[in-house]
Length: 307
Image: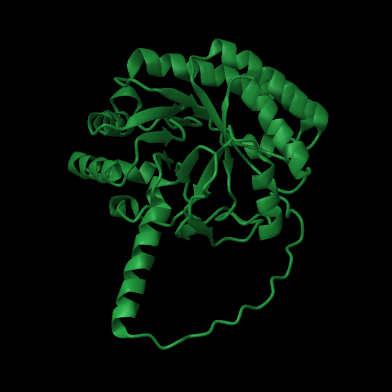
């Protein structure tokens, strides 16, 4: 993805260390631990399936889901169930079986549909956009029907894996066509329907927020990724986009820190997400793989997708 607005150089911060009684230090440590735990707490958590997760045993999955529920999660958004030709074993495979156990542990599931691995390579071609996006929505519809017929799950919603951003959709006409197609798709797909967006700084916060609102009006729950982990924007610009969003737009707090350069394949490491704001937005955290209690998923280099 191209580099967005140049970052603003932040002023240096002077840290002053004061002597404290031992008891005060212990109390401060407890407070920090409590704040750290609270930062991860959300009723909604994303899970991005990867092939390496197939190595987990059923007992490991059951333990993972139990601990996820114990940490306050109520709803799991599964980012995708098909990534190109990869279906993670299909209706009888490891992913479907793991999600059955998730439901048995009391988690409600929002099931992701089809993700095209060539999405970001294809969409800069605006001339192909209308037909290409129509194809993606058709594949999403087919995937939803397949899961409804074959997978032993009872989803409470559905997630469109193709993420929206203001670089791919920086042209007003392309955004309008996208919103039109999403409105049509919301009449064909079984709801509730969810999708997510992120900001690259290519349209103003006001234009971006209006676009998100138009999509929400077309029948979708929109989630905005807060950029605290991806770091595409400098902090003041990040906050400006957040402040422009209406209350109905959900905020996804990123629990990772990007370690790769902007032009390189995405790599990240776990990091504490931003503390949840005392605001009106629906809240979610990305993602399960980065949670402190998800040691079983901490395998291989973070950032791998369905490889």
